[in-house]
Image 1 (cartoon, rainbow, N blue to C red):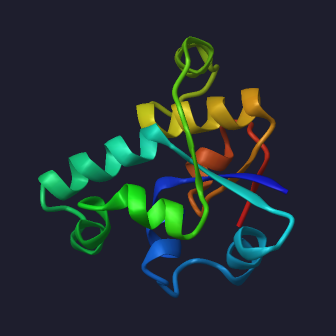
Image 2: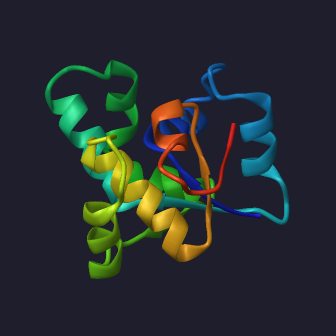
Length: 128
């Protein structure tokens, strides 16, 4: 399965937080799965850590490249096509990070791993 982890799923997976659902953890850890992390999520984590809104993410941010490499998560760049679709998505959900993740999942044929029902409503395939 090809996955795109929502920002909370990335951090919860890396710090082994129990809030990551069993289904999500199983999908991420399955031998045939490829888990992607969007640059969008790295940006969101940096903003929230900078605002002191996500203390547990602080332990990951400083060396996030090494953490992602250790668990073999692939970094997904942001393209013009991703940004275009995110901006044009017909949805009342306005969070730019969520919209971009949903657009990336849709375009790249990835299943979005998210607990957030608002993101789930953006139309990308998802699991939790």
